[in-house]
Length: 384
Image (cartoon, rainbow, N blue to C red; front, side, top):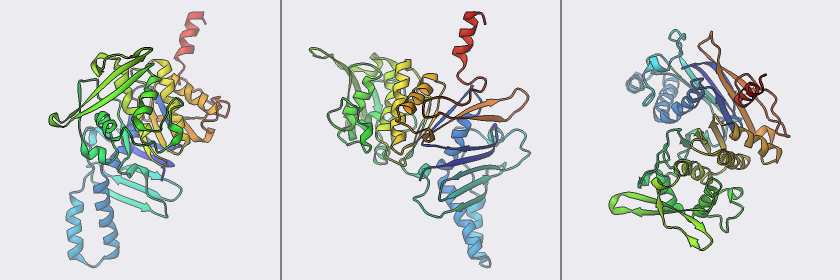
């Protein structure tokens, strides 16, 4: 089931935030305003699910067996060593809100059926887990094929790594590092969402549609992948189609950087299915404006078909493409949510403004700093 709402307390600059999520949720704002921290709060739950389940089981058994000290002592040993893993983020001093005064960090997620709360203290020890499960299939954040694509994606290279484990779990890696391997193993696989089929595609197979959506970034490009088992890697090559055929094949080092950088995003969306959760950081990186808009259109189509997507973006082209998709009725106004993260000069905590798009593509709120640099510079040019 999709996540309808997220509450975070005392995590980095997120003193107390409460956001409603839609099928497509855009996180915008200046650098270091809390957007990535919000995403990290969700990744905390995903990465620590095993520990969370251990403590949850321990708490349940304490209620069921209050007088059985032998069994509870065993659970106490397990619980005493159950800490939240903060790998790649830092220690508790790095992640606690500065003025929290040793309060717990809370991350709560909700949907129409369920409520799930995780709380951990200043030593990062899990101190409370509470959940109410009334139905549904559980949260898409905990699906084995939940896909997160970070902003620091794998760069062009001659060969790319293999991972049977990732491919079997329908994953391409958080850096997109297994994208080439995924394409090689699933190139003839049919898209699970028919609306994601490119208008020029003759089939609904992954490889053809990946190439055609990539054509929206760089015209007439074609991709090919070859697995090299003896070398434990995959070769990814590109060629260009012209009137008399195709050019030679070029490795990714010899075509535009943005082509390889955006490839994981295209594949992640094309392989998705309804109710999946996909988190993407900065999909616009290394793309020209028209390419940014096309990736936004692809996100809009997937979201309209039930995929839940959270996007962190600094691109006004991405935002405007979502507005156009709403006006064209690809998306309904209620299918998207936009949040502007900011920090006031005299405060430590993140403040968040909610912005809505109506059915005509209009925006109801333009807080200061929200994609206004074009207007600011135009005013300077006009001497206003």
